[in-house]
Length: 338
Image 1 (cartoon, rainbow, N blue to C red):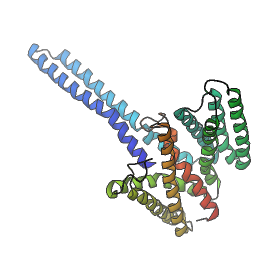
Image 2 (cartoon, helix red, strand yellow):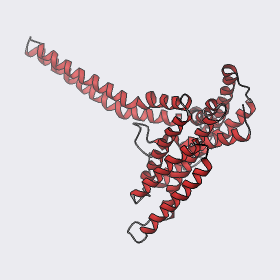
Image 3 (tube, rainbow, N blue to C red):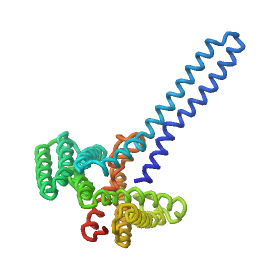
Image 4 (tube, rainbow, N blue to C red):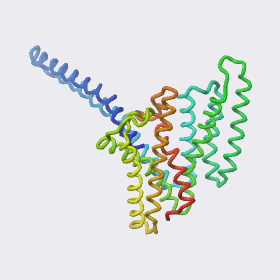
C-alpha cells in the first residue's frame, strides 16, 4: 500500500507540477520580455509593475492549488483514517468501513462494467454497508449469511427479469457483485473485529503495518536488489527479490512493533508469534496485491476509480488490506501474541 502511495504520489505530482513548471517558464520569459519592452517604451513603470505583479500572483495561486490537490490525501485523509482507527469508539470505525466498502464495491462494478442495471449497484452497495455494521454489533456471522442470501436472491431476480434483453445478466455479473458486496466487506470488517477485542487498539494496527510496510519493503528491495524480474505476467516489473524483501520486512516491522508494545504499553508480547504474523500476513498481502492486479489485467483497467486525486480509487488503496486483515484476525484468534 505504501509503495502504491509513493508511486501514485510521484505520478500525481509529475502530472500536475510539470505542466505548471512549463507554464512558469513561459510566463517568466513573457514577463521578462514585457519588462524589457516597458523599460524601453516608457519611463513610467506603474502599469508594467502591476501587470508583472498580477502574473506573479496567478503563478503563486496555481502552485498552491496544485500542491493542495496533490497532497490532500496524504496530509489530511491518511491521518484521519488512523485517528478513526485508534481513538473513537469502534462504531466510528464500523461506519467508516461501511463507507469504504460501499465505495469499493461501486468502483469494482464500475471499472469491470459488469453491472448492466442500476439496481445491481444499489443492491451491492447496500450489502457492503450492512456487513461491517453487523460485525460491530457482534452478530457478524448471522448478518453476513442474511446479507448473502438477500443479495444473491436480488441479483438473480434482476438477472431473470433481464434474461431476454440485449445485455443479459449471467453468473459472471452476479459473482462480481457478490465479491464486491459481500466478500470485500467481510474481509475488511476484520479491522472492526480486531478493534473490538481486548487490546484492540494495538491489534488493529497489525494488518495496517503488514499492508503498508510489506509494500514498502518490496518496493525498496526490488529497486536496490531486484535482479530476477518478470516472475508473473500479472505484475512483470516486480522481482523475486522484491517479493522476498516484502515478506521479510513485514516480519521485521512486526517484531519492532512488538518491542515497542513491550517498552511503552507494558504488554507481554510473544515475539516469535509476531514474527509468524509478519511472515504470513506479508505473504497474503503480496497475494492480495497480485489478485487485484489480475482483475485489472483481465478487464483492461488501470485504476479502479479516481476518487482520491492522484491515488486512484478507494479499492486501489485497500486491495492489500482486503487479504491482510482477515489473515491477521485468524492468526490472532488461533495463536494470540499478547
